[in-house]
Length: 138
Image (cartoon, rainbow, N blue to C red; front, side, top):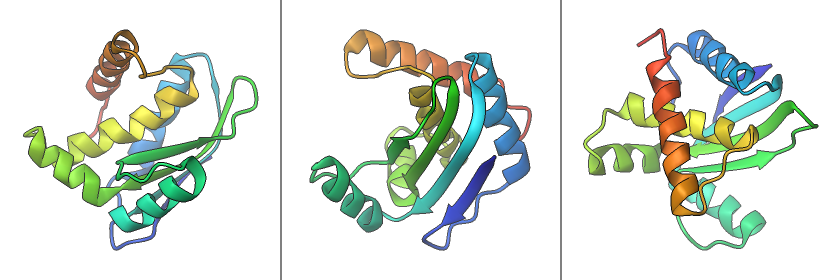
């Protein structure tokens, strides 16, 4: 089950369609959908989690707590909508497209993709682009 919550005033549009898209992406990598919770928040909220749990004193757009069991994807995924908006402006992207990229980025980590090396980052971007292209909603 995929659920969406907000710790700020953000409300995700097309929640049902986004959840179906996420499920489809999970299945594409031969994983099963477990319990996946997205929490939308502001920079301060996510920064606090970043310091508390990862010992990183930096802002970030996403933190994924992977609770997967084998090939069953389970996670808590926190996304700063402030950071997504700033990144969208920096990259000259629409907010919605940048948000969807970040949403699927967390899922791609759950199904085994990494982004630490330049080669891994390139593969991650390619997988994100492929997932974004597969959306059947706006």
